[in-house]
Image 1: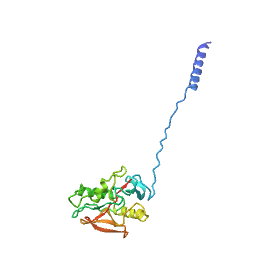
Image 2: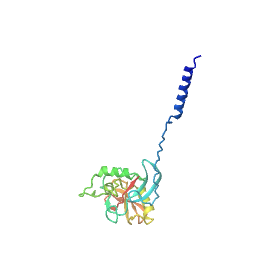
Image 3: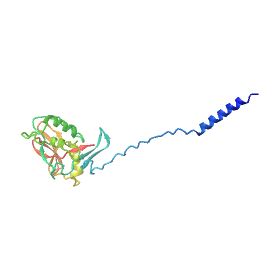
Image 4: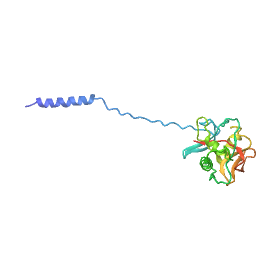
Length: 207
């Protein structure tokens, strides 16, 4: 009876099982990615650029949720500067009025009037002042639309915040070839002003 080969086979099987039992188990590492919690801003609070949150649409869409007005002294002076809206006789196509649409309006105005020209009524015009502004490292400013300027009045001027001047502020919302919309903080209403009239300017940005 041949028992030696059988014992050898049993020994090999036992040793193989022993090695398998003692082998280091494979470790699977699971990496957990923690998404940063977005900052929530209250209307009237200080925004990322040091200005004031004047509008919150409640959620992010089209890449933005909030509108921030520039801080007091954004132009280098304590009071907001005054400027013309632009030249007359031309329809810039800047007729949007809802909150946030001032960016599209401003782009349309710049496309028509271009660089400021000190020899014409376009010298330091309102949309150009806003687009050229660099405030606390941010350069994405534009001239507010009608509804954004109303929000700035409601949430800043009426609350005694933001340093808005008593008088008329340009919006980027155009009426026709001769006139554009401005908001008068003294009368709390919109007016249709001639584009060559000088009104105050306060830039805004959205994020």
